[in-house]
Length: 140
Image 1 (tube, rainbow, N blue to C red):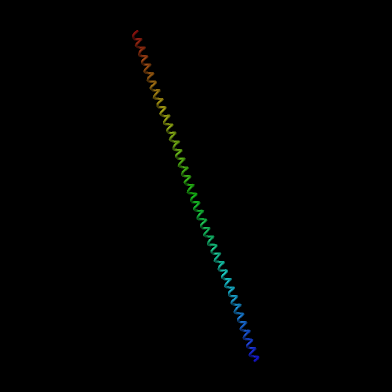
Image 2 (cartoon, rainbow, N blue to C red):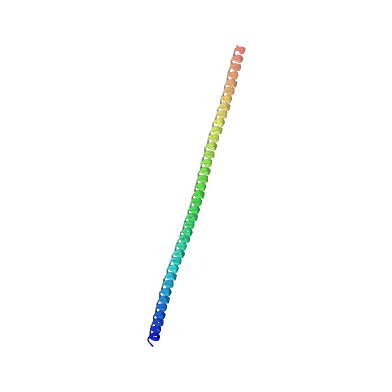
């Protein structure tokens, strides 16, 4: 009877010991799973953060490229407009010089023609006076 009680007590202690061991193992496994899940979530968050950062960087670079392109395009258009204005001004000045030159040439030609006409009139008058004088001398 004492042996039976001793065996019964031993079985109950063994059962309690195994039960305690299973509960400790279960608790350790749960802690390990929670830690692994926590680490997995941290990695996913880190990955998502890096992905978001890359997307923001890409968007920022794209925006910068578009702004740079627009700025260069505007600069080219402004340069082109300035060059066109400069060419028009140079053309206007050239035309004014040509008009001035033509005006001076015309004035010189008119002056030359006027002087030529004046000389011819003077010569004709002198010839007429000389002819009258000759005629007067011839009568005397």
